[in-house]
Length: 205
Image (cartoon, rainbow, N blue to C red; front, side):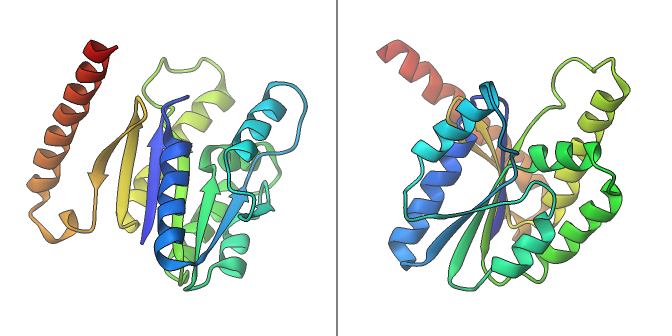
């Protein structure tokens, strides 16, 4: 299965992705590979990278590539492994700031999806629900991020939004076999479930 887990800052998306990968590995005894797209820097980003590393099992292989995502996926994907991409929005930002053609890189990723024999979990940030940025590059980043997520969602088997550490399933393999309206109805039901769960935790606290 190939899937996207998307959410805002500190929404719990990385933890959900890592939990899925750990459960998959426990059931299949397969290998988990992390493709990390962040550039090693100092300051806050370095602390975030260290935090993510500390929460991963030490036996998971980590491959660092800030630009060559499609090539890394094609090279390392196997029927017996799961690749966790962390994360798409950093890859997008790196590409926009480089001299590479973003549309070419985006299409290369979409084309690669059909050729990957193993499981893939993409992690990405939802950045389109806030205030529209004033800067031209920032607006381009928000626009391209949204279009990338839409394009991926059409091809992927499952799409999950992380909200307060809880999974809100927007698309699953079951939904693709039903009437499109069932996806909307299921999403509303899941959203209600998330709200009820959050309210329960609040009362217990």
